[in-house]
Length: 304
Image (cartoon, rainbow, N blue to C red; front, side):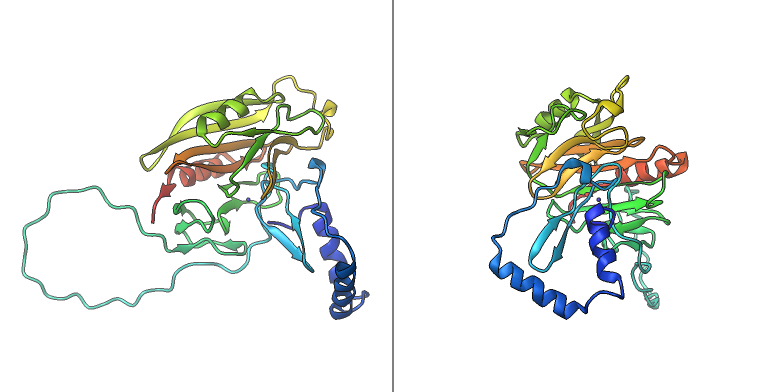
């Protein structure tokens, strides 16, 4: 699910917004001078720097790209903006027609997407939306009260009852053998549903519940992850309030579970490609909101 909740991001943005600092032009010019003379290295952020939810984009600051860390505790995006939705169509006059035989009853076709999820967090008009991601063409039906951005939706942002879900655009999954233990090189998982399920099910520090799922005729797996029964989170490498590390993706960042959350992962093989969706539900999420999220997930369809 990008946001300003990463500690470093919040610090940088708040510093830039202070009126007392130099104007942006002089700061940018000095930064560019430094870039010209300083060897560039890709930063590697430790897991403890993760925000509290799955994340999804990159923040560009003067040429250096900072990867926003994704946490399934929920990570997602900035604050909602304007309400999205299609323009109101002008009714056309009904043409006269010759009576024709009544066709046999058929099932109602899936409604066409009214648009793509916006590039910035926006409160959505109810309807079907396509995901704006690198995965296969995918659409979901969203009720009122939800925010959408790029390929993810969420509700109750930055609250204990926050919840959300969406497409994970990464291609390479490296699953941690121990979600609680010291940071170690995660194991690269072969690109298949079975391999990802096996790795998550075997992970120390989390308990997994695996079930079959069907998205419009495409069969896959649903994996629910929670803190392992009896685990003393205070003994974990990131402490009692830190996340449990689930996987790492070189292109996107971390996926992890914050305290009190349960993670939801859906995995499919689509045209020979591993396609993954990831989300999370806060400890205080209302049953009605959880039911709405499950309805959104169930509405997922592949194709235009």
